[in-house]
Image (cartoon, rainbow, N blue to C red; front, side, top):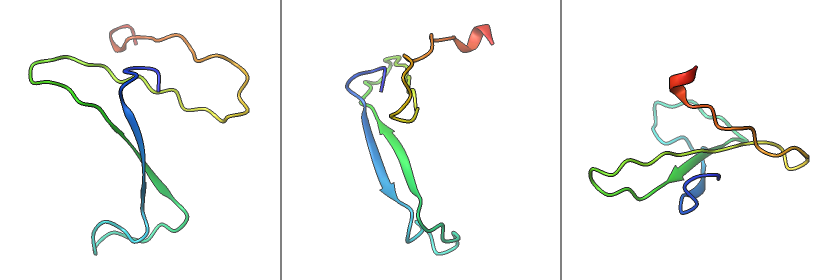
Length: 67
């Protein structure tokens, strides 16, 4: 987690599926991020996912406005 540092990464089971109408997807997990943000406060969430064996540093942040 790059930003905010107070964010929590949670891993949720996907088997059994959350609803009876959902198909089973054995061997998978759902990643979720939880951040506390006060009403009216702006916050950004920056996550860099890479294999542990990746030797490079995270890429530079490119704002959506510049895409």
